[in-house]
Image (cartoon, rainbow, N blue to C red; front, side, top):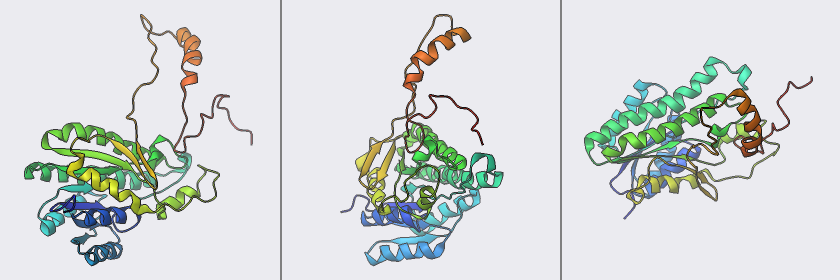
Length: 297
């Protein structure tokens, strides 16, 4: 018996890399999988891999960066698999460019696929799950990039939004038995190559990380074993399994009657500046203790 026997799953962006790994892991655990990818040939390759190990797989080339595409995807799943128990929002694109050079098109392309695509697919699937009455699992995809990442205003904003939506949906959908979590996966893929060549690091080449190693966590979160886990964000991939601490205020100072400018000037640098933590996706030490000034050309 597999953990996900008799379950039906959708994986967006399932044709390559990390998404392919999700599809394979879900299928090996007994789920029937609808592999969604705009590159239908890649989706079919994954479907054939699953069929070759005795699993059930179908494909869809719908573009989830529009509500119509998301609606078509959900309808296709219901036609082919009759129900939806699991949604893995994995589809994503990159349009890296520094903030001052980023265009509306660069921003909108990333936002529509990551944030709106996740929103549309999740909303439509949740309505189906609500009507089915059996609960379900949604696994979103965020990234450490939302901590801050050079050249990725669009992507970091999108991933931060997805984390925030995960927290909110877990609260709203609990009464329907729908659990909502997110992962920040790691793996060597076509998308990861753009990060390796960015200004975020002076490392010339990162070690290869098998992108399929994120799949087991997706399976666990999608199963009844995770009955009491919702609203959480996990880092995974490679040798890593991490819990992202939910955003919260750190050291807090209070003053009767409120804070004047003079009070802040006297207190903040002394009591709060030492609390400034590492900054950015790579968690580099806070770089601005000596000030932020125009650089001489």
